[in-house]
Picture 1: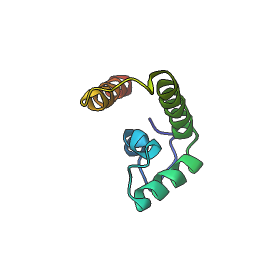
Picture 2: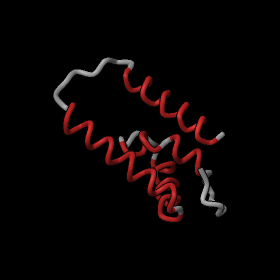
Picture 3: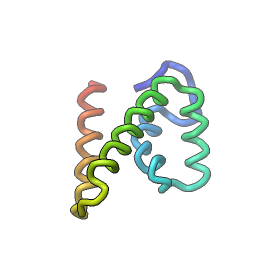
Picture 4: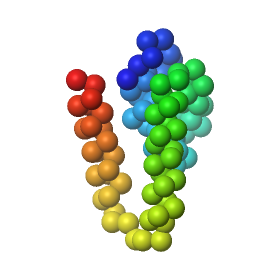
Amino acid sequence: MSCGEPHDKDCREVLDKVYAYLDGELAEGETFDITVHLDECSPCLQEYDLDKAVKALVAKHCGCDPVPDDLRSKVLDRIARVRAELAD
């Protein structure tokens, strides 16, 4: 995905890290770079908002259930594969 505008951070790189960004798992510099990108790039901001809504929905409905250790990696892997298929 790209909005066609030049950015310091590539759109694909931002979207690949959006869940880590949402979880506060990035270093301060990376967090700043992604925040700046989202402020400049409407398509990435829309994707971020969708991911944020999905995360909130999952937390609301599944917050009490124990999560298998490998679930996060499986979900992120599947998201990456779907994005790659859509990009082709």
